[in-house]
Length: 280
Image (cartoon, rainbow, N blue to C red; front, top):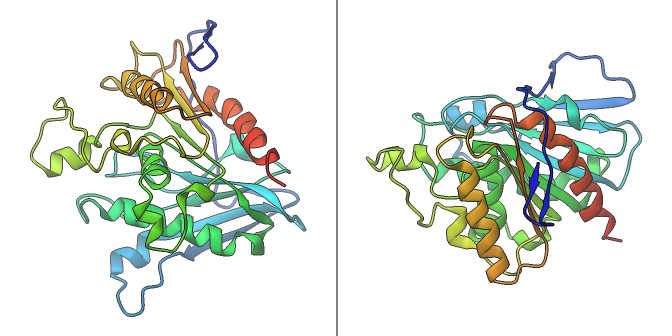
């Protein structure tokens, strides 16, 4: 593992692991699951696709209160995937919210980002009912989910629609998230996936000093998708240049884009504990 934030270089065993997910009907002792919660509620304006896809599930320890919260966005290139709970986030000391969102080709940008922001806003407004703390929310996700987490946390306009300051987020933790404009959005613009773009739909476009603490994790630069490590390394460097005070980059040697998720989760868990313990 190459840790650019601390300049510590380590090696990891080359293997390919896949993140395990809890089955929807899994028996989870000492936890409760609230399922299929519709997080968009525009009066009379919900489409059938929104009613189907704009839902989330909440898993929380029974009788908990004031716990850290992980909002988790699934991957799938903004064209596929479905919400589920990563088994590695099953803990007694945190609440997990797993989010679904609309997908291409049913919708185009910025619908995905609007959904992600609406889901995060719902969490801020309701998570205390499920044992979480609104001042201890970490937004994360893998691949396209990491892209959405980054956009919601860095481009403040999406949460401002819901009267929420993105700086209230305790931490952002994209796992192998795209930092330039997402390749599906570029395809919508008629561009090839190898044509890099940094515009308003790129997390890199919204680099700012006062952003929440950020954890960037990718797989091995030689095994990742389309320069994904280099995008994250550039994000790390730009955040350093603007004097952001809390950003770390990890490259997980030997792991490809899909396989990097499982070994990334322990780093995510430690990050959640650190950034939420800072708060009262």
